[in-house]
Length: 197
Image 1 (cartoon, helix red, strand yellow):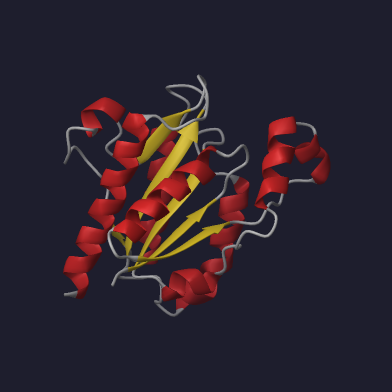
Image 2 (cartoon, rainbow, N blue to C red):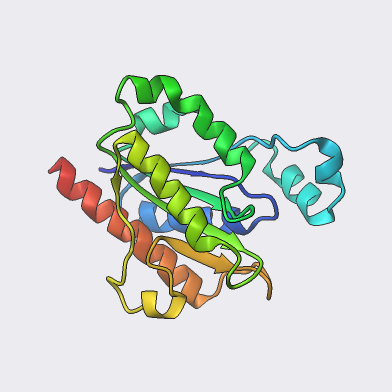
């Protein structure tokens, strides 16, 4: 049984919905899953300035929060973040910055990694955000498993680096989003399973 950690930051709920889909698909395929959101680090006045952000933070109260142990435990990890100026959120970066001790012991190496993201606009930095995650995974010594164009859905969602959701027309996941997420997690689990065989 592959142990999969899904580590993500969500401000408005899109990444949370994407993580839920990944987790459900992975569990249906027999994986053991830890779905963990990273702690909110933005000042409360910033959070409260946007109704949707404040509502999502309130919704996440009591949900499991990511810790380095979740990555130590995992055989594979999928990281998710909205885009911030073409990069990952500061909240996810703050979590990554806590992984130094595990990295120094080589405990992040030889695991399978992939990423997902969202942006408000079609060219809102999804590719650079995913490539930033891939750079981090390379520093871990991880095995990066992008979806590439290994399934017809990738010609519909158009992102070979991971999965990206455009939220400008609403944050609900559509059939293409769900199919792309299903393909990504299936590919991650397949490669992780081959490595542990």
